[in-house]
Image (cartoon, rainbow, N blue to C red; front, side, top):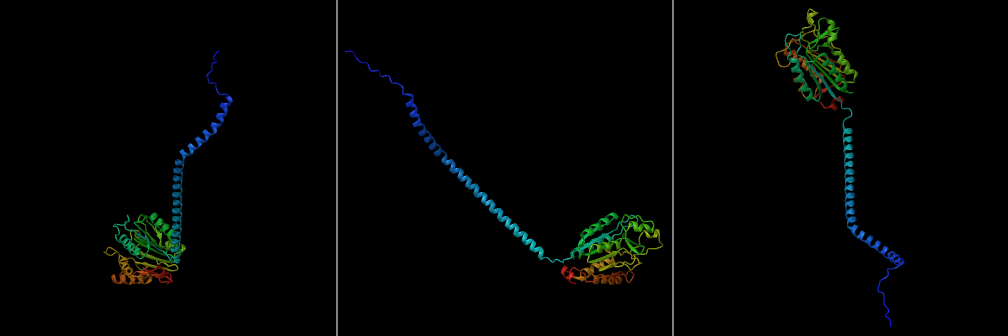
Length: 324
């Protein structure tokens, strides 16, 4: 009997069967990969969340700190505003322009006392609360600039003081302060080269100064007048404007010789009287006039001209001055 051979060759799967298996295995593989990715990414996501949470916390702290600083700044601003409001609204300022001229080329010897006087008086006035602008050996331009600065500093109700030490010349019934660079050969040169005391008083008045004080130590024999006059005429009478007080080292038309001291007699006695606390300006000037007259045995008698309407005090509180 013939044997029947069995063919053991494996026939390839039908294409349709392969597609069916792939269709089944595809979603499973994709699901497995997705789960694996989620498991892999989970620690990274936690770290990211932790970092994000830290950033949010830092940002919150920064915002909170900024808000706190803003509140503190606002409180500080309110406190400053409150303090400013609490200051007296009628507090007047006290200003002084102090000029000491000593080195005149036309003079034989320099004048030592005017610069010493300017420095000593500046210290005393600053001690009494004055804001002092001091100029030494001032030219005409220096004096003009100083007066312009004074204009800008004067406020309503200010007490303003002018001191000039050096050479002074009168002409046309006005008194002129002479700069160190003045060139004077005839009387008309005085008006061109000098600075009128009355013009500075007008500046004080026009800019609202409450009280105007002037001290002039300029009634010296000077090297200019002999060129057009037989003798020195000293200074002219100065008419005090409203609420003004003027002290000059000699009576009008008279001259005064310098003493041998470091300071002039006028300023020495003025400083002595300024040292008395809270002294009235008019009393200080009058006491200085009497003291100089006694110290010189009547050879030098200063003049005082006053139109003060109130008692202006040196070294006093501003509220006391304003309420006088």
